[in-house]
Length: 151
Length: 162
Image 1 (cartoon, rainbow over the protein chains, first blue to last red):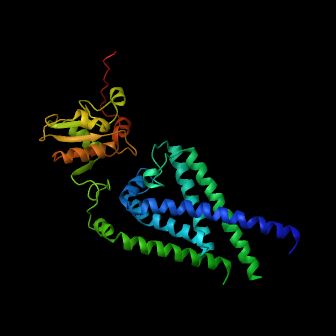
Image 2: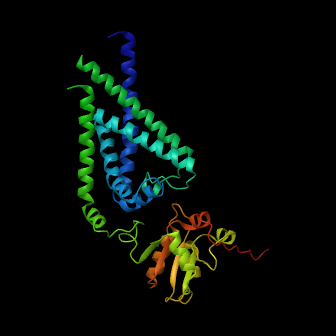
Image 3: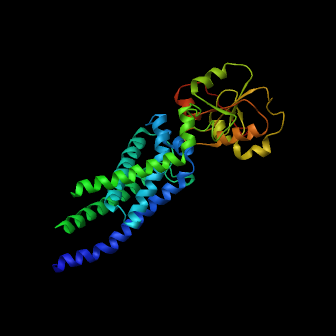
């Protein structure tokens, strides 16, 4: 391994750990706060005025478990490629929904952390963009590692 | 196995497992939904027994009917700035101070509302009224914001200092 590659790989380890724990931790916390309250979360989803009732209920039932499993996947590194890919998709989806809600001028809470939810606005959007970039970094890193391992 | 198919396989396993566990843990709720026992407000059956969630149209109809009492659960300052005509201001925070038996006849239809969007003080106040033996409680899902946006009648109160 060339010295530059060695330095980059050494830098990647703490950065990857930090990114993994950040995204995984946020997803596990977010999932756990909502798992026991599907109806309240369904109402929060309905407040975005984007989804029909059936989809809001389905989302309220499945999303918290999906967040929890993705978070666990990232932290334990089990299915890390699939988990990081799903995290990218999830935060990408949140960014689109939050942006639409801000532009439509809808005043609502995000419903993201149960009773600790924040108002939908620019700080929430920035937070989600940060988490999306971090997830993307993890996804690309695992892709690269997987590519190197197969050669 | 190519990298793409590995990502897809892992994502499907995680997604499938999430759907399976979610359905298993919420089996009763899913059955209730398919039986049509969950109202559009999602709160009526499971978390707010005794409360009916109504639309703006239903609320506007009730405004024209006798025997209906509208209750505004927002703060006095918001109430004074504008409220549904004839509504009584009963802020949720001051419920214990203001409320007494006889304030509202139990025979009346009661319609509670708060600011709208994600506010929940109307539901909390409605739950208190149910506990006090009021049988006909309704909550306007879209709240005051929805009422105003729909261009429905508005009444403004003036504070005593003015």
